Each structure stands twice: as structure tokens, then as C-alpha cells.
Image (cartoon, rainbow, N blue to C red; front, side, top):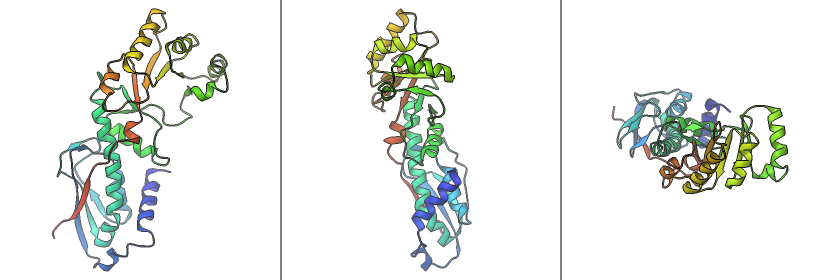
Amino acid sequence: MGSAGQVGGFLSEDIGGGDVTSALLPNRRISAVVTAGEPCTVAGLEEARRAFRSRRCAAGGEISDGDAVRAGDAVLRATGPARRILECERTALNILSRMSGVATATRAMADMMPREGMLYCTRKTMPGLRGMDQRAVLAGGGLVRRGSLDESILIKDNHLAVLPLAEIMRRAREAGGTIEVEVEDAGSAAEAARLGASTIMLDNMGPAAISRVIARLEREGLRDGVRIEASGGITPRNAARYGRSGADIISSGYMTRSAPGIDFSLEVEAP
């Protein structure tokens, strides 16, 4: 479902058979402003504007996704019939809260990396919200590692429970494209490199253990042409240490699974 269809579905869910409270109001035109309740990196503005516009209201502003704002800053203004503005209020604020939360967490973790382009999100998203979550990650300065299962081959432990690594690698090479293998120890990393993996995911290893695996691959002449991805348990508390581990890619589900929402509010402006 595209973003427009998603927003329409969100509104339908919230409005139900009609906003019975706003229906009590005279249907005159009003203006309203959405403000941030705390410092954040904003994301979700286009989706929030689309919510208002879908109900025949105008919505805009000078702030863009990815901008840093302070508490009290106006991020969006909407004008239109009072009933329409108010029936869109909670949906628009919820979108901004979630997406800005993801973007803010991403920005904080991306700033901990020793260089740009290291931090990636994962597929750990609420089904149906992945596209919005990924756009929020991009707004926060992160990247999308693997948006869906058809993008690249990633051989994980459950695949290996069905078929040995050598055989599944043979089939993967025949299928073509890049091949990534998830491993949990240095020996498996070396085996994957010898079999032609282009990326090796070191799953649930601490930063020191990752550095040791990389050192072994270098000693055995297996590091050239192989990217190392660190994944599992990476949060704002330890992201900087993982960034210094020597890994090429830091992937984390924290931004889309655990980032707290951001507080936004809508207030009707005096005529």
C-alpha cells in the first residue's frame, strides 16, 4: 500500500463513522499550528500534510523532513473547515510522533559513527509501516540495508538448519547477485569468506569480538572484498563502540522497533 492509501486508512480507522464531537461545531474555517514539544529531527511531514489535504484542508510550512527543531517550533500549519481540521488532528500527530521518533533516534546513532553511511536499519518494523519507517530512517541520516526479502540473498541460521553452507552457497552463486552470510563465530566467518560471501554479518557479537574476527580474516588473507556487518543488540548505549570495532556496516533494529515517540501538539490559532 502506498503512502497515500496508508494515510487514508489511518484516518478511516480513527474517524470511524464520523467525528461526533467535531460535528457539534459550526463548520467555519480555522487555522491551526502543529508544534514540537521537544527537540527532535522531524519526519513524517508529507504524510501529515496528506492527512489534512485528503479532508480538503490546506497544509504546509517551511520545515522539511530531516530538519532539526527545538521545543516550541512550528512544523506545520493547516487551514480549513474546523470539523475537518480536528478530525485529522490525532492521525497527523501520531504519524509525526512515530516517524520523528525514528528519525531522531537514527540521527543520534548516525552521529556516533566514525564516518557517514555506516548506520543501517533492519526489517524489524511493524508490518504495513515499513515504508514510513524507512523514510524516517533516511530523514535521520541512516540507510536501508535490506527493505524486503527479494533485494538480496542473506543466508541465516535457519537456512543453514535446512541446508549446509557449502550447498546453499553453491545455489546462491548460481542465482547470481551479492551473497551475505550470518555467522556467530570466527571459524564460520572464515568459512563464509572462503566460499565467496561478499558480506559477513557478525550476529550478536560484542565490539571486541568483532575486532578479533576481522583481525583473523586479515591474517588469513580473507578480508579484501568482504564487507563486515555488525548486527544484534546495537542501541544508542553501545553504538559508538560498535562503530569503532572495524565493521563496515552497523545495522540496528532499535530505530524502528524501540525509538520513543516525539511529542507534538496542534492548537487552533486565534482568528
